[in-house]
Length: 310
Image 1 (cartoon, one colour):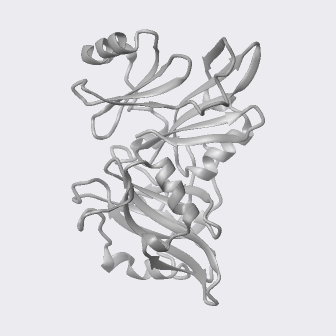
Image 2 (cartoon, rainbow, N blue to C red; image 1 turned 90 degrees about the horizontal axis):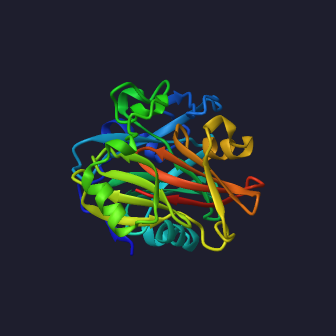
């Protein structure tokens, strides 16, 4: 169910971004965007929206939204968003809080798309939709000092964009409370990867006739289990084989989708899924602005699902 976020949780910094919120012609900065695949994206001007980075409202990040010259961005209520946008948010971001929305249009009133900013699990997520309300992109976030340049710095909120994967946790280093819970409640699961989120919660990826994200507090208390397998598409064969895949071994089309959809994403892990001796597709886990996603590709490079995890 869609909820209005309490005042003060998302904050616009009027003194620095007032005009950029209204107009996409007068840009604040030029941003050179690179994904963690190492392939530079096209340099383009951008306008920014400042929002609180977490539920405390005490820290901020800037959401980067590139516009075509001649288009403007006007505020829009949640109720005025296209039904397709509202349905997408409800389906993919369960429990989200609406923070702000914008319609992108030119001086003649022609709509070019929509920008929606939500809070999901206490973190901001910026989403871009086309004029018909179809999802296009998870908008990149940057700290103020990184608006120009690579978009991150060592020790910053998005420091993992250097590919070092400092959020990874060795399975052998997981708290006993987590391994005990998994062995007691999901004894047939095989643990694949583990991560510590910025809020210190722990995310464990496991497999057992499907792939799951298992979320725990920093002290090992179970929070929830999220199935990551699209129903009826993969895992319909009797003996699936799941193997790790390095980023560079993924098909070019899959990497292109990741770069275009999750600007400056961090690659976490990749898996190939085979059944009856046939490659069925890939699942890739990425971190986009401290929210992790599982993206499923079929063998032809089509996106089956892009699921926010936490």
